[in-house]
Each structure stands twice: as structure tokens, then as C-alpha cells.
Image 1: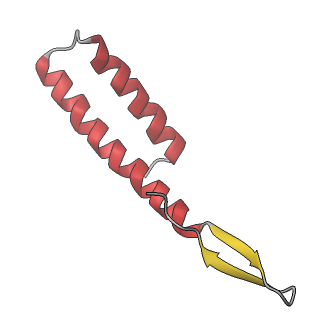
Image 2: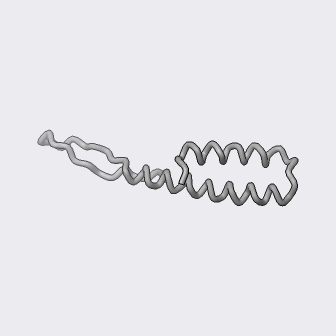
Image 3: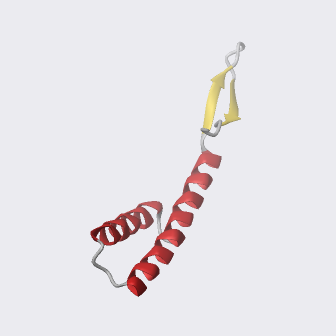
Length: 73
């Protein structure tokens, strides 16, 4: 799997190509399929990163406690 940045960059190029509207239908379909795959990869990267992010909360006694980062809705 490519990095998040690589997948996102390729996805942006696909969107630019498709927005021009000058591609044959078969090429558009292939690019759409690739874009959907890249979108899923990007989402997977973000979900993994979100799972790793933690917030440190200082306790009254001065110790630190980790809590999972709350997902944004």
C-alpha cells in the first residue's frame, strides 16, 4: 500500500483528469475505479492514524493518563 500522501496525490490527479471531461468513457471508468480504491486506502490510513493518536491528561496527583483520541463526527 502506498503512503497516505502518495495515494492522495494520485487521487487528486485522477479528479483533475476526470473534471476536464475529455476522456473516453472506458478511460473514465478505469480512473473512477482507481479513484475509489485510492479513496479507500486513504480512509484506511486515516483510521489507523486516528487509532494511534492519544491525548495525555494530567491527573490531580501529577501523573499522566492516556485516553483514546475521540473520533470526530
